[in-house]
Length: 389
Image 1 (cartoon, one colour):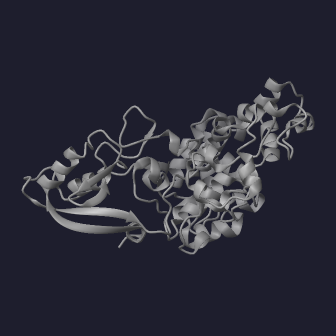
Image 2: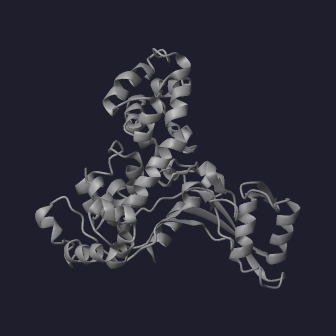
Image 3: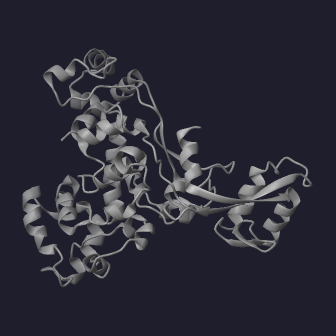
């Protein structure tokens, strides 16, 4: 049994009933399921279920290409109580949220819950590539050649293959002179199941993260497995520097980070990245912001922008509609966070969402920076070194 099959079986509890393809098709039509969300309530005889149950049972029984009198199995899926039923904020790591995912399959949407054939949509975080393929790809980027000081792609490839190509032990010559250097290694494919992350949006009964370690995700940071990634970066910790990296690591490293327990959205409610102060400093670290806001340096920006930090009364020196405010996971598309127990301070956050915070650091701007960071993680030598800081 594969790792994927193992955690799928643990996550879902299904009740099975014998029926026919015709009965399933008739029930789907009588419940007006056509063109509706898979979460739409439906009935089959005296059973309560969803249109998604009817559809998955029909396709799962191979009814699409069979005689309608063929025997079929009605599977009613329910979620085990320890798995999440709401949407997660995890997609902030790819510059999106569950709000942006189209129900079913929509060819005009950026991402959908399903593929055209009805199978689960898998977002490709890393398509997988050999170390040599990554070097060739990186050396074909003009900005990399400038940043690394190479006159052309050929010179770049020769030097990187000689100094940054990992041997069988995962080391490379560059480490001798630069201990912080990261070697190029072969990378396995890493995919994110959108239905598992956005069950409420996609009409799945529940979401389920891997209970085992998907070690391939650690290769993005030059580590061989999840255990090494945790030892080197500490990404299992909910308050590690990057919330996106922590979320991705917690999701894929089920054994190392969670001991096989369910993914816990509530761990990230108090991440420093959600605080007004960190958002203000992040804003001042963006050169285009400094230019737009009229500051000569990040330091000058922070001094002035401190006047826009919200106080305990939900106000700031610049006025209530211009304050930086503490954020919450709901802004990143999480509905699972609504099931988390909130402190009074967290509950008050939702009352103070000022214009300045919305204008400067709302999801669109923050996500673009996170998205770029994840893209950089996927093999660029310059990025891997930057991520080590």
